Length: 191
Image (cartoon, rainbow, N blue to C red; front, side, top):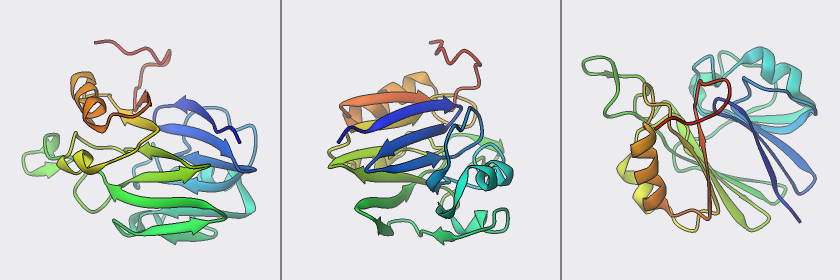
């Protein structure tokens, strides 16, 4: 079965496969069908939009999100701890680290602290999709293996910039990479 992946803008994606519709960080873009599953990487408004979650999730759908998001969203929610894995109807989902160690609001306070946000490894139809979340090029990325599709942030201010995203991509070595966390409305990347 074919997997379909559509970038909806910013860090938002629609993934279709195995008769399931999955949205990651629903925020920007058109949501033309209801989701069976929504994955949220962290609680910032541009990733954890309670209105978008409510309007795009099927009644019986499931939201997977870090615990920090539970206060913002309602419905059926499963919180995954870092390293924890869940199997949902033959779709494997694992929460992996995503954080800043180079980008700070003020000295000593990163935009994305360790252990609050996550990235996801999604195994669907035998292929592994990696959504990095909001992160720098972190050492833990060097341990990733057999990634088919990598969704890598390259916005620069809150995440890796284009050069770091290219370095991360070379290290991860996915078959396909899609840059994300880009605020440019046209979706063009400027290097």
